[in-house]
Amino acid sequence: MDEYSKDNWESVFYTTYNSIVNGEIARHKAAKNLKKCVLMSFKLIENDYGIDRTLAITDIVNKCENYAEKEFSILKGEKLKTDKVNVEIKLEMLDLCDLMKSLGDELELKFKYVDSIDEYIGKCRRFDNEKRVEIEKLYPDLFKSTKWVALTVYAIFGVIMFLLVKFVPCTTSVENKKIENQTSENRVVDVTKNKTPEIEEEKKKIVGAAVLKELIESYDKVLSNTLNGLYDGCRFRGQYFVVVYVNSNWYYLNKGQKEIVVERVVKTYAGMNGARGLEFDIDKLHVYIKSPTSERTLADWGPIMGIEIEE
Image (cartoon, rainbow, N blue to C red):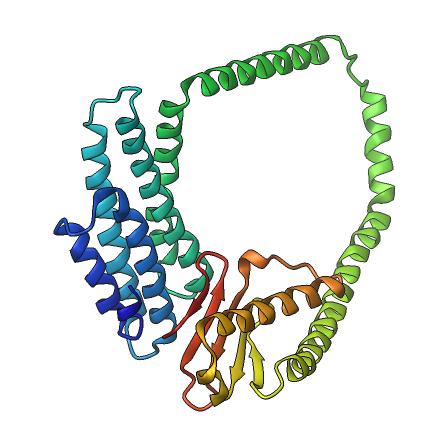
């Protein structure tokens, strides 16, 4: 895949997709290879402002959906026994489900602004049900016991509700009237109380924005010191999209040294969020190392693919 990483999304996607369709990539490796090239294609689509992103996304999702459905029908037709071969067949089906789930997750993360994106996400995530069915076939005893536990819990809950309805005395009309009057008298107070959480929430947002601003300024200073001679600035788009610029000294580093730089950039940012008590989910974070002159991506880090170095 690396040799196509600098091309457009069509080259990246169709090179792998056609190899899979033509049987050049083994079936048990197909889903994982397709997942890798799709995520790379989404990255290229996200950064390319000169294409119709909706058409690109539609093309990728439809091709992957058709491939997954076709493979599922073939794999379901295989005779299922308890031998190793058939377990591997099941694992191939789970890989297909994971492929489609990853597509849906990435679409939601990167392309919320695209028209009809929910439709494409829905196409991807409908395979979650297929995954449960296949796991249940792999581990039937586990699911049988789970079902019996669930039925028992529902039965106990039903009995409790029946007893409550049957034996708890009804409130008299006089008592109902008292409750209504008390509710009416307290209504004005309740309205005032309900405003307090809203005000507090607004205060939290203002404080959070100020803390984030201070975090960005401090992050810039820390990288200036820790990456001295390499660092050339940074920019942010919200809390979870970070771009770090490096100068031409980057090209003198070997791959291992570059990975250390990316790891330091990510860990420093995550640690500074935690030190300030900010809510932070590292699975939402995307960090890009770029050239300040060309805006070319030299390396990046994401929760799915981890560190990727552009050669």
